[in-house]
Length: 595
Image (cartoon, rainbow, N blue to C red; front, side, top):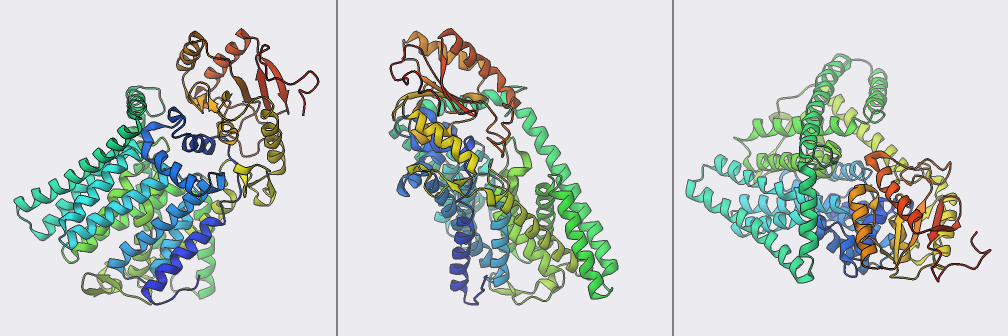
């Protein structure tokens, strides 16, 4: 990257490089599970709103309109992701730059954060990326509202964070950012009347934001499906065995944080001590040990799946150190560090992925931590940190100033860069780990610019061509065994109103089928996979069907339904099958049932 000293040009270059970097990874990979589920909901947001996961209603609303504006293909939703990530990077740089200086070093740390965060989920627009963006916008408004004494910005911060509740239900905890008001009020010695006024301004904005989105839901007539979705989530939280059981999520939260702090303390204490011992060795020896340490950290953390918690813990420790050491001298800097910690903590709440999802709350925390570690360690830097009207030299103001931590800071950054590079190359979300294999496109208007393996392209092409003989757009279809993308690609509608029935309990599936039978609904064309689409290698090797989260239970219900109504396999290519009822009028003539 070419860094330019001019502040505005640095922002432009950061946005440009982030956009290009993110765009490089959207062309490869075709997932039939998560991506299919979300894109089906976005596509059918208005025509069949019951297909969306209504508890993330605003995510689906935004996803629908961004995808529609960009063309409605798979690539359109992936470019929506690129736009959100680029916007987040620019906002992060501008906010941190207001306190740390819009330096080239800060731009590099933000870019490293982009690289670090992009490999954790899908690369289509989704609620995780939108959650990050809404938190960033809310923090920006709240931060400048407080330090500039502009109450209207605090109200708007509340509005954004209140709306964020409909991006993802657990974002309700975003209201705890009101603590930032109290921290700043305490540091500035506000009167109780002033504290209450600003508190109510924020909370009032939060309620207003939630009310505005609820009004939008009412305008769409989606209030019933939203309330049913919330009821379903709450019932899971009360259950002992459901994926989102409250007790299980709490245990996961506590366990992950204990592990996070332990790993971070080991890295910071042992790493600092070890590098302090070798700091005066010959340069070649030091660099050799750095390389060995980077490889060891990469193996321990990435190789064993712990790297997310280790770096999250380092962010916690460094930011808390900034808060407790600087709250008297630099109020705005402390406020920003505090808000970064809060967002890092609350972002993963309610997720079954635990602290793995903390990565979506790292937009402020990680670059702040990296640049502080690098600066406080005594490294000579070509910039100054800015706090308010002062220029702050980190080296003389932070308590840690040793050769060991100077080397450790470099080691941590190199490790993050190495791990991010590995993840960026190997992660295509349930597609091949070898990017050289994903060079085949599929001749389908919704798959323009999407490349996958030759084997996957072949079976998907055959399925799409075969379905044209049995269905037409807007027909009702029953697709299961992890293939909700079928609905998106064929523009058909889920017969049961659920595009991904694999995760529903067998009782619910049986009840939905019974209701359809009692209404005399036309029996649907059925599409199913014979191997697991949750494996990166499919269809190569035909891995067995998944059974985790008891997916075999609804599968048995579907088998009984097919036997009851005499369904027969009308077409198969070895990985996908199409089943029809014997009385169906749209089946192929005898002899045409094989590709």
